[in-house]
Amino acid sequence: MEAHAYDKPLPEPDIDSKPFWDGLKNHQLMLQQCGACGRIRHYPRPVCDSCYSMEVNWVAASGEGTLHSWTITHHAFLPGFKKDLPLLLAIVDLAEGVRMNCQLKGVDHADLKIGLPVAIAYEAATEDVTLPVFVGAQ
Image (cartoon, rainbow, N blue to C red):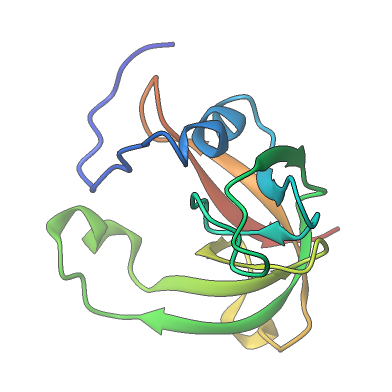
C-alpha cells in the first residue's frame, strides 16, 4: 500500500483501545465485553461501568446499527476537514446495544431519519490506521 498524506488528527491507541484499532485495520469492529458481567461497552476503557470489574474480553460486532442522531457540519475547524464539507457526523445505535459516534457517508441528507439502517465501513487513513465510518445499509 502506498503511503499518502493524511491531514487530519489521528487516534493514538493506548493499552485499552489498541484491540479496537487493530480490529478496524483488519476490517472487523471489535467491542469490549466485561469479563465479569458480560456487558458490552464502547468506547474502550479499563473499567466496566456496570459492575466496576477490570476484566475485559474483546468480541466481534456485527457492524450493523441504526441512526440515533446526527449533525451536519458546515464549518471546518481544522483545514484537513474543509474538503469534506458538509460533514455528516452520526450517533449510531449498534445491534450490540451500545452507541458509536463517527462519520456517516453516502447517505443523502434528505434521507436522514432516526432509525435509518446503517452498516460499518472502513477507511484507511494511513498504512497503520483505519477509521470506522458508517454507510447506509443495503
